[in-house]
Image (tube, rainbow, N blue to C red):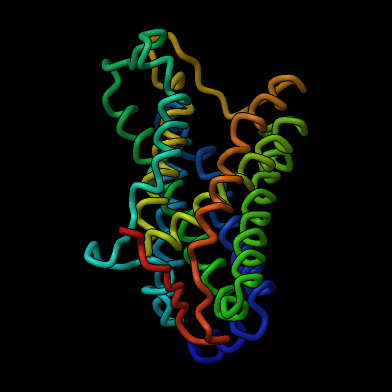
Length: 283
């Protein structure tokens, strides 16, 4: 069975990636919170649902990578093999910008609800894991097996997997959580983030920094939900001016990602584990 799946992934990487994305999305969109809210508040029910579903899917994706023999290629490497972790610095800067209200004291975490804060933290850890393992771990790695033997192929793979990452966020509109403009805006800046995360993963030779960066950014973006006097809502709307500002602010991540991606060399192998060899660092 593993060999058959591997052959399908190698022969039809894009189709394989889309199928995995659809299955993962279905599994993480089961509305268990509607049942759980009978035993707890709705906010906690939503957090627990997300933690459990995204945690299970993350494990299944890691198992899939192991069956395909791609754990190392997907960035599950030892610290001794990590490279140039400093390249992830923009996401730290964006996270600080995203959580600036907390830093300036405009909002304060509601420390009277430690369990809710813990659930909130675990939720965004699970988001970082499931989305990075799915898009950078599985999808990008599988595509690189087919197209990673040329520089053009690397760029197409990174951009292609990032486009799919962006399109995934249209689910928020389909499920009625976001307005169309808000969902399209999120799709746009998710594409920028996707290119950035993909480039950092290949340059770092590890998926762990991008998982952390993804978690940190999302964690800092919804702090109002666990702040004193804050409100929890799964719906989101925006206006054209705000949408344009968000896209302009995050556009540098796309540019930065494409620039640092230039240092990633083609594997020179059409199939087999991806070896994104880097150019020697100048000293």
